[in-house]
Image (cartoon, rainbow, N blue to C red):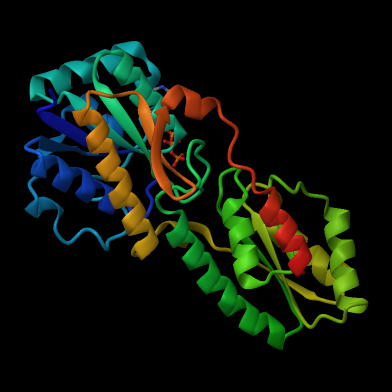
Length: 320
Ligand code: ATP
């Protein structure tokens, strides 16, 4: 029987992590299970940086971005010796199960601990939507709102100046944030790891939009880690009718108050995590698939291909 659940946030922070911490805490406490917050991800397990959580401790965090517990990366956690030290610390503290809110790296850590006898459940917390086993991650919707709000503003100014705005958004090798932003903002072009990148083709397409279609402005949404957007903007200015301007949205995409969609998603996922642990189940990760909260073994999720967005790329092409 589970008596005490630990909860930690690991990897990059995401809006909605606090809502997940609150959900895990409230639902566990309401079931007579104690909760311990672990500070700074797996580092907190190693250093014994624990904080018992009451229902009051998670008041007033539902609407806050970031994570109350802090997040960190601990590369050494891949080593068995370090994992054993963490297990000892948890046993000393009486923690017999753990909820890990983070990305796929954090899931691997959760799987390792489960194999060592501490049941762990992973919740997908990242703005990148790059975690298999779920249609959406906690934080994605909020980041999408931030992107859309900012691109809408760029559109106002670029349409007044015959500009081509090239906007780089996050995604960590996943094109979802760029694709969803591009559809939401009526962009002229979207470039992601899934579409591939051919600079000559991009310039050719912009020449066509400027000359043949006589577009007054153009918005290009591009995923991070694809090209140097400043260099591309310069080429746009030199080789097309548009004046090219690059904007890197950067870390503002990670911040802000979570949207209601993220708050609800995090609350539902937190509930599922506690329910699984109370049933004595570990080594699983929680996802939302076709709007149903579900769980699957972490190993299986890590081996799965990500959800295909082919239909949305097709929609984007038909809307341009
Ligand atoms: P994000 O998507 O934001 O990068 P993430 O959870 O994938 O989140 P990582 O830096 O990959 O971020 O992993 C977070 C932490 O999880 C690492 O610092 C490490 O402590 C632990 N971790 C990562 N990979 C493993 C692994 N193979 N085995 C055990 N622990 C791991």
